[in-house]
Amino acid sequence: MSTEMLRIENLHAWYGESHILHGVNLSVNQGEVVTLLGRNGAGRTTTMRAIVGLTGSRKGSIRINGEETINLAPHKIAHLGLGYCPEERGIFSTLTAEENLMLPPTVAAGGMGVEEIYTMFPNLKERASSPGTRLSGGEQQMLAVARILRTGARLLLLDEISEGLAPVIVQKLAEMILMLKAKGYTIVLVEQNFRFAAPLADRFYVMEHGAIVKQFAQGELTQNMGMLQEYLGV
Image 1 (tube, helix red, strand yellow):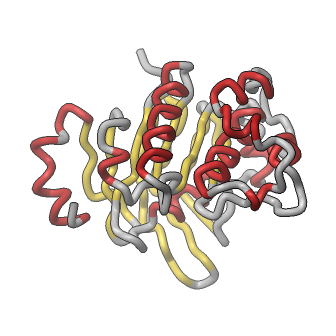
Image 2 (image 1 turned 90 degrees about the vertical axis):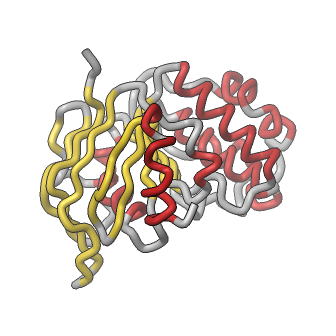
Image 3 (image 1 turned 180 degrees about the horizontal axis):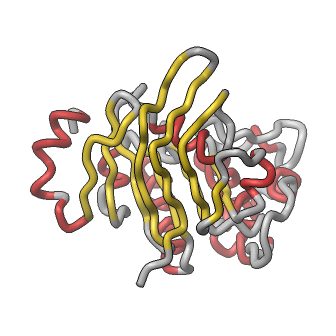
């Protein structure tokens, strides 16, 4: 029987007085890749930020490995083995690529070693002493993901990691996700690039107006393309 890594029930979230999430319900099993689909403004990034505890306020239930986190501070949530890669990447220009890699604290045992990371991302080894923002967009994205792999996080939240990148880099990121899945990582993707996300995900959740409106499995993708066209324009 699958172990549930993440369960969200009736999640509401606000930024100030703006009520963004309206009763989100979803679950992610250990080792799954799950994709949140939806138009810009549907609430996908806010869902990610709410899981990490970075929205203004939230209510409902968010369980990580069975532990309720709705009232926990972000650093305590991270120490449950959660890694968040935000859309803006957060690479520090005054640090080298390797210093950026080493910056986050360990949140759980079993994180990837630097040499293992460099085997997975050979570009980062070549650019280890380069200032973080001198890296190409694709290298910065690889660094942003590599940074959370070193911390020991096993549940990864990846927000728009393919955005604005060349097709050859997007393909490398897809290979990376499949490699991480093979290693037993659990991954939640927010993606606008449907062609990138479609072959990677085990299951899909479609969001609209701050709520989940549809969910389906990889095997049901073909029969749901009409619905996706309606919601996403894919």
